[in-house]
Image (cartoon, rainbow, N blue to C red):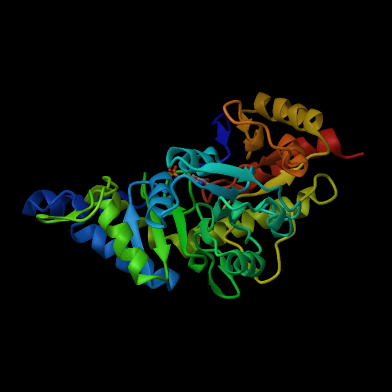
Length: 362
Ligand SMILES: *Cc1c(COP(=O)(O)O)cnc(C)c1O
């Protein structure tokens, strides 16, 4: 009962299964890295799981975005993006020497408001980086139409979108490139890790080259980086992917409990049509920041720690010139993700809801 409950808890597979992969490496002195056996095996497994044509496994979700920007030749340009995301999205744009131009978000899905993109396009705009926040889909059709009209590249940050489906296709299969994160806090994880997904064989080959310093054996093609992942990480992925259906079912059951208990108490976003959600997060909106902070205080006394996700709205970052995004700022001030992970006991979910209801039910 006294154990602390955080917004998430990393999933761990059966330890004998994981150790058997390591044992095989130790006993046979197999390679530890350089896109060896297990990395290749994980890539094939993920391609089959997601039904996508090309997937590269990389060291993390941040480097995946950076490789995508680089592979699409986007240096020194303006990139239209969202202020409601994890800072890694914006850092990647800045790290690649591009300028983020923020477009406000759509208040129901928290994703970029496609109707407000066109007014932010300038002659320097070369791309849109949109984020499938909490596994909810961006307005893919509208973004695609704008990209075609203005000849822009589209990158989706799909760090939250693993196993979400849109029109029965993986939500990771859209845009020029979609990136994903397999960080320990994500729905599917490999401790650290990420992926680049693209329908273009040419972009896949480019990213593959960038991942390994830009050379193949003694032929040097371009300036690359080291984004190669280790066999130990790939082994974790091969173990964890087997549990994914079970993980999603357990998360769905917990989400159902939360929804039943908290309807009319807090604002709960509706799952958009055409979307089969992965239940990666359970975000709720409080009336205002004061109410949110009050509930956080009440829950903290019981060792329960939800997370302000995402806060602050990134158009207010102190090292960037301020750009106005009132909807994102408003949502960021009063949204939080409640604890959600497969090991979370239902009685704890009831307890969390009871604490919130006691304060907010009128
Ligand atoms: C986690 C996350 C990232 C970064 O992924 P890492 O693997 O931690 O580098 C990028 N974007 C979003 C939206 C994220 O949630």
